[in-house]
Image 1: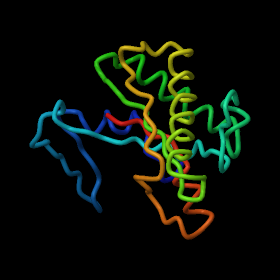
Image 2: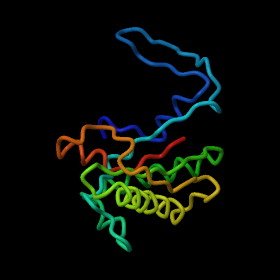
Image 3: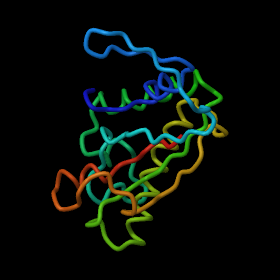
Image 4: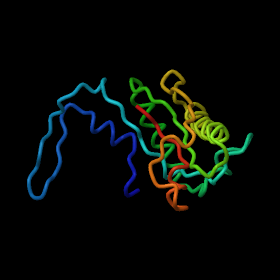
Length: 162
């Protein structure tokens, strides 16, 4: 999926040596940091939520904007990557956009979003010790404008934070 950053890509970045193609030259990069000191946020915005969803008791497939096979494949891919890399610890962080009720309501909504993803990971075999959260941040951390419907939709998301 073009423009999407998955957990596997982050793991590749954390390798002790990375290589890339720049123009016609191969470039090798050696990180100047400890992987343990890094934090990453992995964007799951391709699993977008309908505005105001999930309501209490609503499941993942009915609360997503477009519950397609591709959306669930993103989740399955991340489940497999986490299961194959048990040393990675993540936190599930939910977000909302500014038009989704009061701030208290947005925090509760973003917590429900994060909880759905958290529950999915645990139900599909990711050890609970590997997954922190779920936490809701309301509209405090937008990744796009709240002035357009498209921007608001991108802000109604759940991130994996490493």
